[in-house]
Image (cartoon, rainbow, N blue to C red):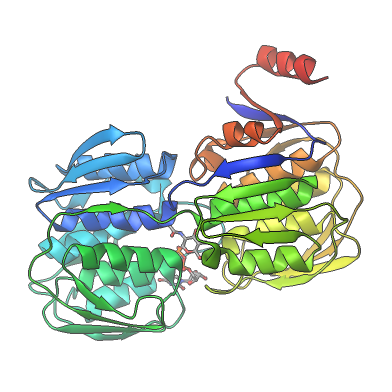
Length: 431
Ligand code: UD1
């Protein structure tokens, strides 16, 4: 089984190129099913979730052609089924976007219930309620599948009880070709919601207001092919920014949209880092001791829940007492046990972590419990004294392309190893 072997203690210094946004890409790939013409998607991250999504699309007849590592040409002109099942699809959360896309184009969809990271109960009631409002009377979970069929889809006025990225994107997809106008109120405003809306608009959809909490969609009868480049990944960028903070390094994240990183930059400044922004890059210099702070995760433009483990790792090394409140997912502090084994002093009370900063983490044998927590534990290991091994890196590879390679280029001592022999060799090489 592959694991990361890490020797901590080096400041990470240099530049890192950020890839395309995984969560935008998942919505955009699904949307590309909605035209019979060729769609070329650029800046697609080469990560496990994306490859599973492409596999699912191929399974119903979408032609997928890899033009180069980050560019695919897709053609959905010969889709012969609207049923996607199989165990592999459970591994990604965003398989549910295939429901919105297939329902929108074919008025019929059946997809195995998604899995994804175990960070809470993650219901899909808002998606189903929205599909029903648009005319899919039977939209429900049945026999381990999400099913939705409609004679016709008709625009509707939909109020989301909670701000949900997934439900907003899914309803954009389902409503893009519905008859008449759909209004989504209390919509999510995340950059990836805007990117999916932009993609659909480039295909000929009529969507206004994405990025605000009211989105208006006028259904169109047909969508056409396009070439489109996905926005940079806010969370990959934020993870490297926190890598600078925890290792007292100096990292420039390149190919980013600094506006999308504002809540992350603001917290880094609060805890004592310096930030320099340019048009498409952000530099984080962390020469000083980290200071404590309070943070609460919120929908965009608030501090992202997907950055909560990374900031907790940094605050674990800050002077004084910090508080991190998780307001989106109820089960997102599972990694704290692993961090405690590395010397952190953190108490979790329901959805709040109370953190007493320690001077150092120490290396340990730990496991990645989910995608973002796994990446955060890598940061902890890079800051720690001694060796750490991290198991279950398959979770990290769901969302970070070449994570070990990019970190090594910044001076990290990290290696992906698959045997005890290779682990010992790594230890010898860095001792
Ligand atoms: C997406 C992201 C995930 C990120 C999250 C919040 C993808 C593939 N995943 O997940 O990385 O952490 O946004 O930014 O883009 N909820 C309901 N009913 C629903 C849907 C959601 O109650 O039908 C609740 C959820 O339990 C959660 C909150 O709404 O408490 C937000 O969830 P949501 O924004 O939908 O997250 P995902 O789309 O699953």
